[in-house]
Structure formats: structure tokens, C-alpha cells
Length: 252
Image (cartoon, rainbow, N blue to C red):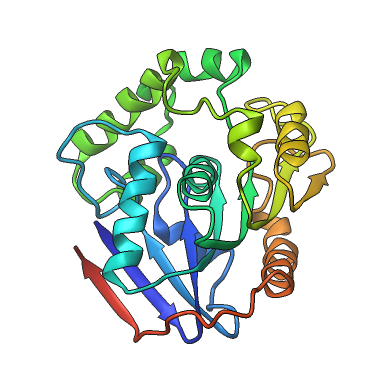
């Protein structure tokens, strides 16, 4: 697993979306927010990270992230997750509720609705333009076979029912202060998903971004999102001191 750690202060775990990479966070946080040490992994099979199992479940990636935090001697943490990264955070926050202090979930879902499954079933490299291929090759460093594997795994989500299947009872155990960020025109996960998360997670806040689709935090929204998310995490910070550590760039 490849990761980078930047900045000084309390640990802030940043999880990218499916087919993305840790480098995507530079578009949101060109510099680490003041007072935070950003831990930025490439999820298994993405970017510089390998995937020996040839499989990808959000539940397994949650275990990966706990292994990374344990490796860095990080106990309680704050985190932001985009789409699949947010789904990993949902598993983390339900697996070890006392460990997550504050989290931000961007365009995440606790189950895959039928409209998302239709999109997943059509996940194909044939739809990529040359420019999109170029972008994928810049993100993923292990060649075109790595990219083909990601698309194969993405299609498999359409028939997956034992990974993202969290119920309201599952979500109710989350103790982290949680900000749910969702576009009101998300064609992948409808707004009902965000409302269900809001109603099921005890300490949740809901931010609906108008006239926006899936993952509406890049481009012109990036600076506003970064400021709002960071302010939310600071507000929700618990009194426990988190482990601080030096800057590094590593593979574990």
C-alpha cells in the first residue's frame, strides 16, 4: 500500500474515490490544512498500490486502512472520504465506532441502489476517450492491466450484495460527528441515500449542494468545500490528543 503523509498536527485520513488516487486530494488541499497531518493512501489496486488478491470490497479496504493507521500508531482519527472512500469510512465507523472522531462523507452510500447498479453494469473501458485514458495512466502506475482490473472490479459491484449492505441499525452505532455532502442531482446515488444516512447516524449534519451531481466538490467548489469540511472537522474534534508523526512517503 502506497501512502503519503503531509503537514503537522492531528491525523486526517483522506480517501479517494474508485478509479481515483491519493493525488486527487491536491485539487482540494494544495497544502495540508493548518493543524492537520494528512494521511493520503492509494486504495488497493489504485495509483501506486498493488492488489494481490485481485478483489476489492469496501469492507476489506476498511481493514487495510486500520492496518495503515496501526502502522503509523494512530488511534482516534478524523477523515474525509469521496464516494467509494466514503463507503470505506462507513465500514470503519461501524467496525470501530470509538476510533472515528469526525468524518465527512462525500457522495457515499450505505447500499447500492438499482440505478447505481445499472451504471456499474455498463462500466467499460470502451467508453473512455483518449484524454480519459491519459488521465487514468497518470493516476495508476502499474500499467494498463491495472486499469483493466479496476474496470472489471467496478462492473462486479453491480452484482455485489454482501459488501455495501449497511442497515439503519448498523449506522446507528456510529459515534463520530458526521457531515454528509451530496449533490441534489446525483444520478448514481439519489438524494434519498443521503437523507437515510442523515436520519440513521446519530450525530449527522447534511449538506446538499444544489444543481450538482456525483462528487460535487472539485473545480469551482473545491475551495469552498475544503474550508467547510475543515471547519466541520475542527468543530467536531474531541479532547483526546491524537498521535503526531513526521512527514513520510512510503509503501507498506
